[in-house]
Image (cartoon, rainbow, N blue to C red; front, side, top):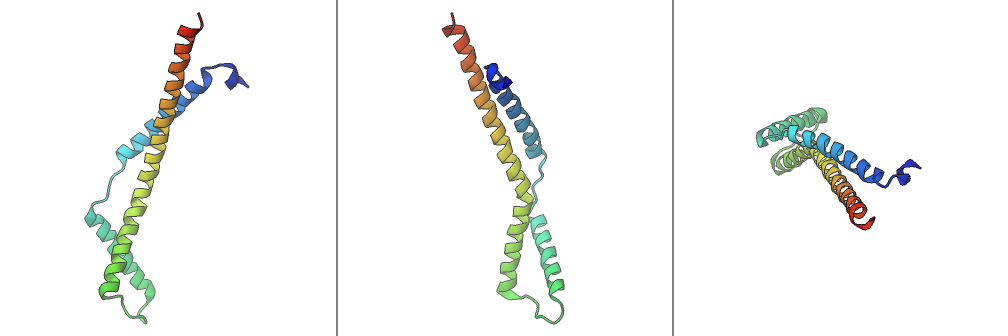
Length: 119
């Protein structure tokens, strides 16, 4: 296989893969907009109203502590749904940085090995 014949193929592949992953997901992280607490509360309130509409007129409306607890849970859910793509992009970004660092380290070790030990 051609990857094992050339000693610098795997480090170069890791460097390119890491740079691409880090660049793409770094841009995604940079462009990700965060929701303000007012927007989160508004979306949670809209979901709560939609839930009450689906319950229908025959059931008692949600009130008191139960409503506050449900609203708090919906706010956490809205924030989690909004932050999921950001967290996934951060995971891939750091994986790309790891590949880049490993590839660069391997490449530097190959250069040192060729210059100093093969004379």
